[in-house]
Length: 441
Image 1 (cartoon, rainbow, N blue to C red):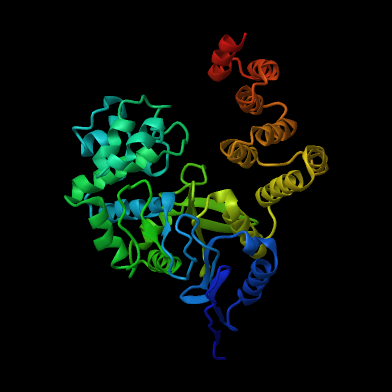
Image 2: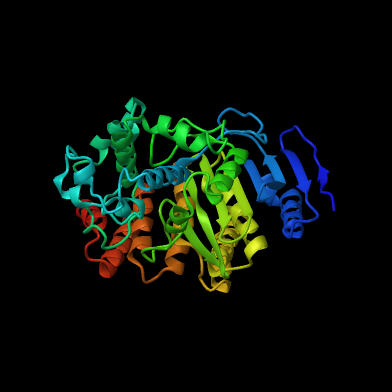
């Protein structure tokens, strides 16, 4: 049966779209469900970005919504979005290419590959540990980095922001997501190849995958720009052994350390369906590429807004349509219900809703909403949300500490003192609480 192709472009503030319905695709009904969900509910109205769902090469739906808040341009099918940490996939692919060519092995250490690396403590870290975030290296994001990031011109310029930091744990002991570790991987790529990191990617990843709208990438930890169609092309090239061989592909999507992370790939099990890919997020940036083990399904969601400004909601609902409900999805949707109830009906109703939902919300998401209110000068609302977080996590020290921080901002010092003390009962080593109490008492 021939494919039925319905293609149209709607130019306006809401969306532009191209819809391809493949009657031979087993995903067609679910794609229709996603389309209805986005077109007829608040999800689409609150989303600013582009989605693409494909059955292998066949694009089933590709749709753009809203606009870029920074320049007010309407999002389009070919809008370029910041990749953020999604770029780690390209770094890992590059490392595996060098491994296949016997330029490196994954058990090689920083000390062996970068003998002049300034931090002796880190020289025993292996490439495999860098790939899997088990190196003990931390991050480079800090107020100092924010003040000086415009001066960064190459990978080596990132080093001063983390090079002297002690390891957070013995390499291989546990996992800690590390942007610094992926900067080091980029430096290794440059050292081994003699090429600039971005130039290497262009020649060895983007060109063979036919990704003309991707790059340049200054950082091997993430960044650069791409389109949903280019990301689909990357997924196909990655799966079809056009970038790495089958052995490398398999090792990259294997949960080697039981930490839900392979080599540059996040791993998830959604009701028995194994998902791999990567997301990225920062203020004004959100995105994710989902691929499925053993299936041709590709799901891409990109946005030029922060994760909780519409993107995470769309991504989660699409996953629910395709893979069913999971505890993770349910907790996310619970959080959204509580926040919505608070915004529309106030604290008491939100607290009641939280109780009805078994106090089952995501702490991080709740805090991010609170922080957003605080940056907008609405500290009273931030305090309310932290009180809800305390309700949901009464046995954890950090909600009390965060709540106290906002109460200090609001001049509610007596309440802040009580909550810092409660936090210390649960975690006597909470340095923030200890320092604040010295100032307040």
